[in-house]
Length: 440
Image (cartoon, rainbow, N blue to C red; front, side, top):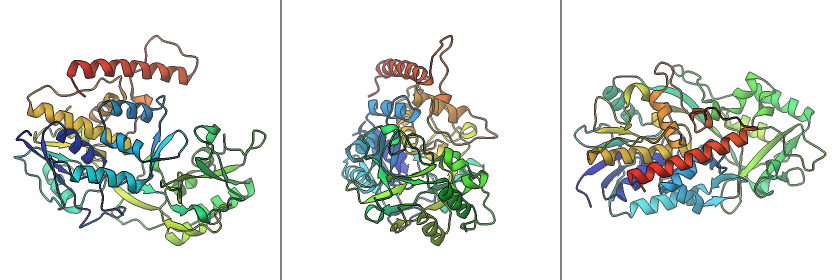
């Protein structure tokens, strides 16, 4: 074991990934996590790497941004990806997990690792004399937020994120709902679908836009991340908007000759298949209104709601202004950041950021150059984006092909052909990069 001790604040996806990457390389990690004593508004579990918004790590297809990112992380021995694959539940071409099994497995492993000491306490100040990774996630405790604001001399940006409701499978009317994945991808029984006629949809969406929401505090602005927008906010923008989002009926007809006007999809939420979450139904509606709106959906008239949707404030720092290429504070080199607090958005992206930060801590301690993944890889493109985005209008970013440099002077007959070319280039470049830098 190497003598250097590294403090990691937060045992979410980024913090646990960083702890694993450092511990396996021989560093001793003090992993601080306060949730056993003090939970934030959306946390339910005492265990690490809790998935609060959805149980899905999104598409497995390598021709999607997040699919490519997961493939790259697998090459870096990602703790999160390994445990997701070991605890997955059916979800078409998506990687969804049993939340409890996934979180328990990661917690058990890290609590028993000889190079990791778990400290179940809140951190309210950063010791600038020690190497520290701040991985507090999007819901930093008030004391820690104050400490960080004092340290970086700038206010946090913030936006709102939301989690979807979960219902029991045995309360779903299977005479109205049917199993089907969009375009029959994956197993056709991966999703439950509740179809709506135009009349049913028009009535439902009218009730939705007039339903009561939880009142925001006076000092909070209504800023939502587009990728996790509350369903009622979407509908208020346009009553047709949900038909191009979570209620999109394309590819979900029971047979080729018919297509419902709208479809509400439910995805399996646990390994035994007793719980299903409403896909894309993140919401800030009051609980009685959620129950009323859910039970207006055909097939969910008797839905037993075991977890209501909630909305919460997500914090992130101005990474382009504050951090260097190591994801290290420019003015305080012992302090590094990882995960959603840096402005990456999503479970997979947060975990990937934890890997990059850990590798950079290692190289910093060993007086080696920064680990800068090539921009042609999804991992490199994502980190490059948050480091070089507009400081005056910095917004969170998910993995997508739009942030990867284009292939110059090549013509493609379809987006899929172009994405395949991006994937091949990324995989070839990453393999060369990992080999030259001896990263495994």
